[in-house]
Amino acid sequence: MVQPTASGNGPQGILPAIDTRTRLYGVIGAPVGHSLSPAMHNAALQAMGCNAVYLAFHTTDPAGALAGMRALGMGGLSVTIPHKVSVMAHLDEMDPLARRIGAVNTVVPREGRLFGYNTDCFGALAALKERVDPAGKQVALLGAGGAARAVGFGLVDAAARVTLFNRNAQRGRALAQALGIEWLPLEELARHRADILINTTSVGMHPDTGRMPVPADCLRSGMVVMDIVYNPLETRLLREARAAGCEVVDGVAMFVHQGARQLALWTGRRPPVEIMRRTVLACLT
Ligand SMILES: NC(=O)c1ccc[n+]([C@@H]2O[C@H](COP(=O)([O-])OP(=O)(O)OC[C@H]3O[C@@H](n4cnc5c(N)ncnc54)[C@H](OP(=O)(O)O)[C@@H]3O)[C@@H](O)[C@H]2O)c1
Image (cartoon, rainbow, N blue to C red):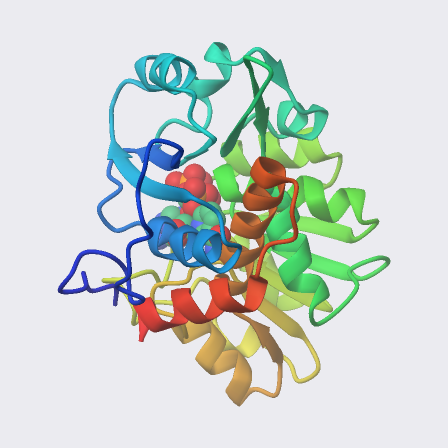
């Protein structure tokens, strides 16, 4: 479970020297009190030697936040729930992949214009590819929410053979149609032979940590099971999958890679992925 640190300054607890040239980055959302992005990004910015700070902004006004970003010359913004869709109306340009996904989690300023990107898609695929290349593999994708959209487009673009499973039939069918794949009800999963199973539902997330999105008998030795829920770090799904002989990919891997992609877009530099991962793990344990 995520606990606030005593200093409120992440596990590293060190602030950079702040002067008139310090660049401001941040995350907008409602709520953002639980966000691990400030700890992760501040650790990375320091390790990169950037004169910069990254703050969390609780706001219900994404238009105002973007106007503030322009006026203050901020270096970049992360966007989280519930603004990932509504923020798009206030951008100057959209990355084609973010447009297809229909959600933006990253705003990049360039020469006075604001560009929208979706790095959740990149993050999910980078995390999965640490274990397996999904090209040609049968993938069972669980969920049809915002994260499922980002992960789904990434999988389809990576030439995976994806089937979508979701509790709500209407939402499941709509996303499957947008992705050009088949939707099946969750009950069909036991009969489906998947090489890779990816949970993008919120089932198993704190505080309901005793729950899992599929029955344990759907998990077979040799499968790769990825859970994008990262609080707790080891969800019940991942615990049961490990016990069944599956390879597992936790949600921190996706979170770190989506954040690393944000930093690369903002700074044009290679981010310190392992420092980011260690920082997030220290917050979660
Ligand atoms: N690791 C990362 O970097 C990362 C990034 C983004 C999100 N996430 C995590 O991903 C999860 C989903 O986020 P989201 O933005 O996609 O949320 P969302 O848009 O609200 O979608 C939630 C999904 O969960 C399903 N669901 C919820 N309760 C369920 C239940 N009891 N049984 C079966 N299905 C259930 C919903 O199914 P119905 O359509 O049937 O309601 C829907 O498909 C969250 O836990 C979030 O923290 C992680």
